[in-house]
Length: 253
Image 1 (cartoon, rainbow, N blue to C red):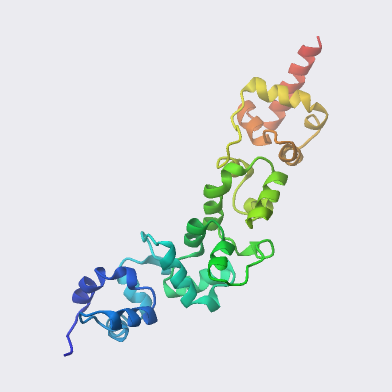
Image 2: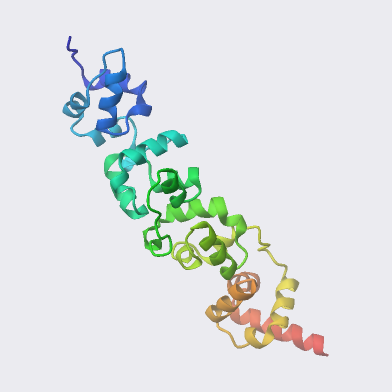
């Protein structure tokens, strides 16, 4: 017995089964397993125009699911069904957006790294360092939220990143400043004026002649406050240098 639907009645039905609206193929398999009569994927597409339009009508914006909570089993099932696209993060993101599937950041949040998902699926791991160009700002932020507490210095982070198959410092810097990156770490970031002066005096030979960029490179290597903190505290880089010179002269006298 066929049923007549309109968009409103279809949406009411779909709301109760939203977790199973992954792909048209997945929905077809799900419908076959149910005792009740549900609209086929063809019926949905005929009424809404495309599979993505069905998802848009259910408040799935921009191709990716919004406000959906996935468990590991569901994520692995989705990835397994589309394994040919589950290669690099950039390739999956492009495909997932077109098909309305969970993004790479959703997987990284659940499994901590892209390769850990692939290990679960017994897929060939991705070279994270070579594929770092594929990271979006959203993905980098997710990495920082999970692993940022382990950041101390650039060199230390790169070693940690290599061990855990994460993006390098250079990749992080493409999306965030060093100060923003440190905001996710446990490194003490706020220094008093006197502490800043003492640090600059200790490293005076570099500080006195360095530009802000040169000091920043030096500061990263030695886990020191960046030029940004001096600029903010003293009003300008030049004023910071003058204050350090005066403090050094006063100490000498």
